[in-house]
Amino acid sequence: MSQLNDGSGRAPVAIVRPTTSVTSGVAVTQKLVSASVAFGNLLKGTFGPNGLDKMLYKTNGETAVTNDGAKIVAELLVKHPAAKAFVQLAKSQENACGDGVTGCLIFASELMRESGVLLEKGLHPLVLVNGFREAMDKTIQVLMNHADVVNITDEGILQSVARTAMTGTSVESVGRQLADIVVKAAIHVAKQNDDYYSVNIEQVRMAKKGIGSLSDTTLIEGVIIDKNLDLERLPRNLSAGKVVVFSCPLEIEKTSYDSEIEISTTEQWVSFMDAEEAILETKAQSIIDSGASMVFCAETIDSKILHRLADNDIFALASIDKAGAEDVALATGALMIDHIDGIDENTLGSFESMVVESYDSDEGRRDRLYLHVGGSSGLTTIDVCGAGGVASEEFVRGIYDALNSVASSIESGSVLVGGGNAHITAALAMREHAESIAGRERLAIEAFARSLEAVPATLIANSGNNLLDGLLELRSMVRNNLPGSGIDAEGKPRQLTDVWECSDTILHGLEAACETACGLLRVDQVISARGD
Image (cartoon, rainbow, N blue to C red; front, side, top):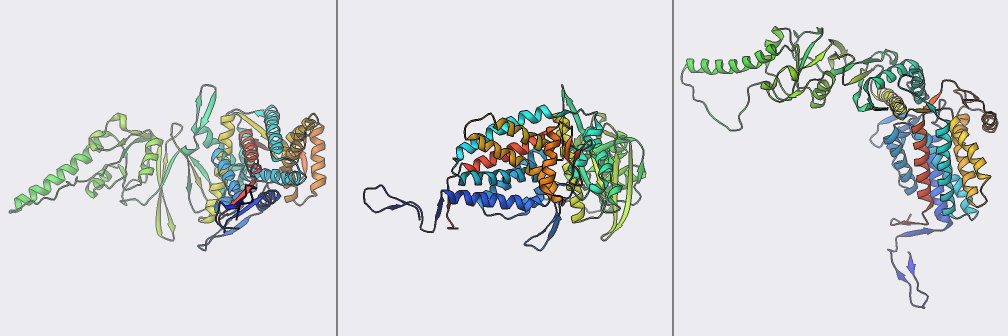
């Protein structure tokens, strides 16, 4: 219970409930630092090319095996306030960059570890905060000067960025092939705006084939639709043609009011049926006259219209979800039509070829439509092959991380050497900068430098090599200006020529981690209503 005593000798006044616990002073530091360090230690083992996986067993009985930091953090049920801050940090990094979550959390954890040591020695938290922020500003300057320029035409470097992002994931075994696919997909949807490019990765779709091996993964300049055909005699192969996309049903329109029609003779019945037939025939003829060879509808299509279109070798697919219809429209350049009278030359899209393939699955026959649009396609689709289920989700996650890194590299126009090179370079620069400072902020800047070294140190430790020897050798190589010095896939220091990372991913991770640590360091009391 927290009480207020004004020194007048009167009884103290309770301001919170008796079950509330209030932690102050050094105990706060211990609480926040311990939780932060524990969070970092949880993820350290998954980092880098030699990182191991975590098996997550959920309360509903489902299991997941992954080494993706964002996935692990998203599945954890955390209670501690410091741990929750780290969860928000992971979400921020994932939303902003789509990659670099684990490295970001490791750095933040080390900042808190170093802070705990200095706070126990009596250093004021605000001195630490000011020192960290000054070091962060200097680190940004150092790394921006150290970055290499990359252009959308530098496919070799962009493929290296993709391979680096996939290193240590389940897709690493075919990383070279997938990197080529990812780069082509990103370049396809890139749009030039004056002197820079923007890449909307939402225009890159991931389709899970569920069969074959991961090496069979391909890139489709168009869309893939998983849906069984409504009619067996529909064409399964088409060459170049026009596409029409409907958002309305192609059938007899139902009135919104109940009505009854009294038919007393056979002739009246025949006339009534002929009128319906005429309406459906008119709808079908409108589509035939438009010149479209493919029809996609987000609603239902009357069977009479479907057969009439099939008689004219026109492919028609009904009841696809609205998102699928929008994808077809975006890919082919068609406009979504909400009435049959809206068909004209301006509303039609175009395609280069269409193929329907059939597979046998546990649920029976499965049809898959491949719509190839070509270079003008507004969408591109990566057809991810390999085992289905959890494994397929991991494949998609690894490819998605690589796609985000490549897209960020194209947009920012700069990359940094991977393997911890950026971190060790900044760490050495911070040590030099600390030498010029006489105040206590120097201690914070030196702690910042040691925290930066945690990233290459983790790469060395996870490979089973001697941590101290590897770190000292790497420092020496950078001091001697050996270009591209970093930790390779075997955990040994060497000059890296084909390991690149997006500079924005690294810098955002460092900045976000620094801000999170500074926010926690400004906490002087922890008030828990639960009493724990």
